[in-house]
Image 1 (cartoon, rainbow, N blue to C red):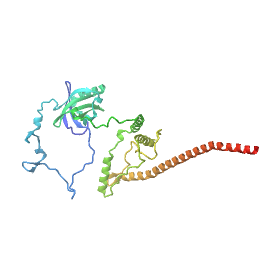
Image 2: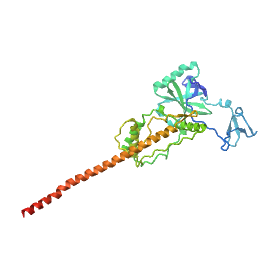
Image 3: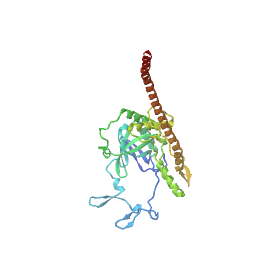
Image 4: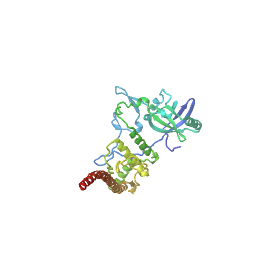
Length: 358
């Protein structure tokens, strides 16, 4: 079991079977925290809570909930009041149906939680529900109350644990009316084939290899500020040849993904254009900077080393193309001259023969 505090205790209602459980957060945030400060002197900005009637700061223990009526009257609502809600889901995750997982619209999915067995007698019915979900290849849709409102949820198996995903109610998902492009847009089969090839090439990247490079970059800037070093420079976007149409962009994209892997492509592309970064790779190995990691130097070095080779490759390709064009033109001219020369010489030979006869 995870060594984290449960945020909600209750039971799963599965027909007449009741399973005591604890709700635990399944995700955590790794974003870099910032504080609000006074721009002029760097002083910390704090948000304090004042009572409007007494005009004094109050502590968290003095604060409770209240409902504001239409006329502005505040009606106090206590936890004791909420414990008497006339619904069965106040402390119960009530399973209402079982459906295939693809019936759940991803737009409805929200926060994720793990469900842990509440105590020893709950282990057997917990395992029963888990194995039943596995064998049926379905998920359970349930109602439960959390943080002052009744919610919809989906129970599914993750490893050996039952997970609960909060769901939006169907009427909370907006219809995408008027957002899609008009029906007069034409998609060609060749473009679809190239899109499939690009999707297959990019599909080899594992999700476990992906990293939050924005957070690492923020940490790099913070480390530079702490150590007094110069801030890292933002990388300049690569400038390739201008893409004139969708088909060319797809062709260059497929080639740019396959070339680093040593894979060939039969689709013609323009050298040096439309390069994509190798898939499945992350930022360069960071160096230590004042107790933090820095990667800007590695990126700048790699960019400087790559730029000359890219320019040489592009120049060589263009030079080969000019030579090939000149060669084709020369062969074409030579062939035309060879065909025309006999036609010009034949009348001349006949004229000389007539003069000798005369």
